[in-house]
Amino acid sequence: MASKRRRRSPAFTVLGLVLIPTAVAAALAAAHTLFSLAASVTYFSAGFGAVLFAHMVGVLRGERAYVFAHELTHAAAAWFQGGKVLAFVVKADSGHVDLSKMNAFIALAPYWIPLYALATVGVYRLAIWSGPWPKQEEFFLAAMGGALAFHFAHTARALWSTHQSDLDHLGITLSLSLIALLNAGVLLGALKCLFPQAVSVSNSLRWVMSVTKTFWGALASGVGDVLRATAT
Image (cartoon, rainbow, N blue to C red; front, side):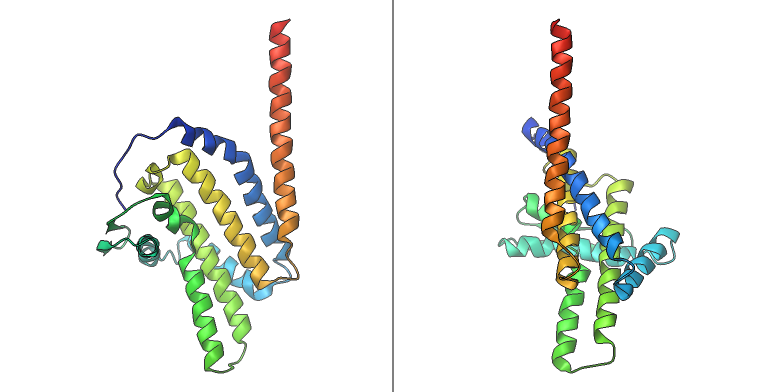
């Protein structure tokens, strides 16, 4: 989606830099939680691993499906805030949506909202209401794992391979920090909802806060040592 370049306050870049340690810690906490569960949540892990592997080796990229979800999420975010969709274009490997309004939430929404995972939840609820069917929970967990892997893999590839004009709204530094934080929160939240007894969000949050505090404490101590050394 195209966006007009604008002058941004340097505070956006400063805030993005400040958030980097917390964003990295949050991503590590979410990844650790995922991998620690892998052996005990077989169907979810199978779905997640299969889609991630297929994406990495190029067997099943699903570019058009990702582009569709990406642009639709932009549109849905605009609708949610009272905006209008003026044009919606999806091609094999690119697309764009013209909107009547734009802000940071709309610009970054596709990078942290896993649309297909939300759709999977909706389909599962409809299936439950329609009546029981064999291994419905197992199929749901596998589909959720696959949908989340699809989101994370394509988001990472999109951010790595090309410049995304969506990031111009807040600047690359702040946008990437927020995207990392939000995706970590999405993954932790999803795992907590799917496996409530096995996941402790509070422990993850405490670890992230501890790492952040340690980083800034060490940095402040190092800067203090340098200043004292130069003053003598």
